[in-house]
Image 1 (cartoon, one colour):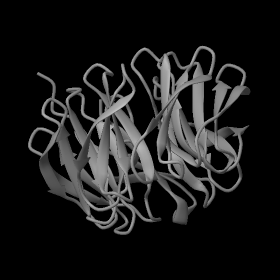
Image 2 (cartoon, helix red, strand yellow):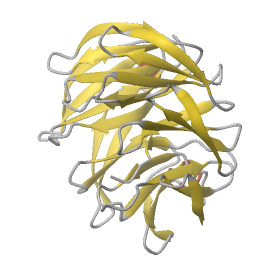
Image 3 (tube, one colour):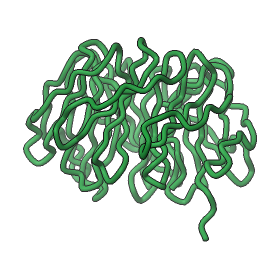
Image 4 (tube, one colour):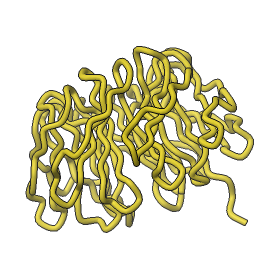
Length: 298
């Protein structure tokens, strides 16, 4: 029997990461992380957690066995969005100010390339076949698709206003993008990179996650303190679920049923049960829980 997955919640104002056991929904321990931690990416085996630290101008590397930061990657104060390749060999870090994505070798922890994108890159996601990197360009109102074989941009797709978080479905056929200022979610068909749908949600949607075999999409609405649930087959909102104050980061547990939402102003995580569409638990974390990215071990 596999061990229960852990959620690694960055507490930006508390300079720490709360580690939640998803079996008990208890914070098992808290790891100090300097530099206002924001973005997070967890390796497939759960051995390493990478945390963007804009104030420390880079990335902190956590060893989950040692329960401590064991290394840092020096980049810039623009480090925010962060994602790992499926094979854990490459770490991608968006630079909010320089309009690039840094490519970091996870063995040497050195930047080996910079990928030019549009203005203020934020959310990142890599396709399961390790071929494509998708980048939400917040101030350009677009998403870049980058070929990871050539490091060239294949396509730039206009979306809503100020895209921030994004996620791919399991088959990597659809990309969902939360647009903060237009209060909607863009749906992109990845083969053509054409916009195929737009779903109106509530105020300031920051991030999105899928559950129930990709049939339900959950979007955090920061200003309204709730999460919109979208039926991905009809692209209709079927429910709004009240969570904590200023929800932002969101990720789905490995059971594909429980969705964890980091509440920035409430210093907590809300757990949504996708079967009942209600909040089944609330977990106190640290100050300024943001957890932008894929914060679950797999």
